[in-house]
Image 1 (cartoon, rainbow, N blue to C red):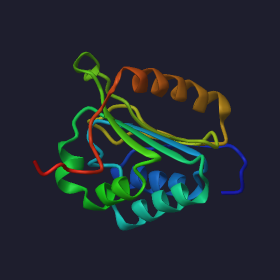
Image 2 (tube, rainbow, N blue to C red):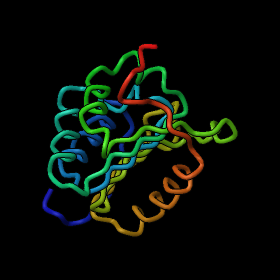
Image 3 (cartoon, rainbow, N blue to C red):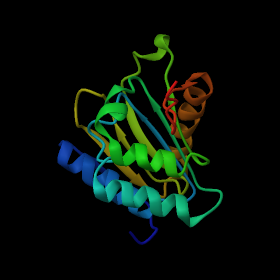
Length: 162
């Protein structure tokens, strides 16, 4: 991507995952993710985790914040992401949405450079990918911040063996 803004629609999970990985590849600064469980994002892939690690190593100010409705998939099927959470626990946090907001259906990933991927409903792949669009990114980031504030810490980087 050359930094010029654009918006592209997608209709398949394959296109969705490709947009997610391309967005991760160009991400800078903060990365915000809201998803029911991360099962369709591609974040757990070798390539996805490599992009996340590159982002978090690039700057002391880099942050990854994830809000999930259900953390079971992350905790049981995402060992690469859990390893990254343990390694970058100072700048990587996972929270769970409150029960009364589990009806939220959109899914999205937002970057610090006004780029994002939005799936309009958690049950379907249809959505959009936007690049260098501060108005669109600002709208979704505002929604994420409100959700983040009312969510609770959910997945820890360490396990206590008591």
